[in-house]
Length: 213
Ligand code: GRF
Image (cartoon, rainbow, N blue to C red):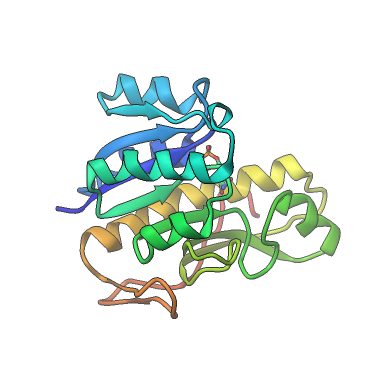
């Protein structure tokens, strides 16, 4: 069985999707960098262990990273899943968890790394947008891609309507990627292109949302 620690900062809908998908993953703990993260009460209710490492209590980014790393290492997870974790982690931290740290980003990377991806997609006039599950490396939103899901950008879309359509895809591809890890089907050294072993695994997974007619 594979185990994971899930890092969150906010509402935690991706965390919920992963937990509810029953992938066989053992969630050792949910760790938030904000004590008021709405993800925490949900995790507690589900009987999951939770921790808070509040970034505001640390004088430097490195001191925060160090404490977070210690909390995680104590739990000895196979995977570290970032699910709406809104802190940039330093190179030393990333090095410690290289090859087992995974993130979900709300764009079809390498397009639109960073913030406000939906607004930037609308401004750029792209016709397809989506989400990417990727390994975390020191390059911001630049690590090897594990899974992607695409949705159409529709006439009249707002940042909110596009975000909602993409979020639906996030909730499908993140649990799917976790399942591949649990089944030991991911070949990744954390640096090069990720291969998924076996059938039914696609890197370019076009998902048609219900409201795309
Ligand atoms: C998601 O859009 C995710 O892709 C991004 O932050 C958002 C987090 O949402 N990294 P949630 O906390 O999982 O609901």
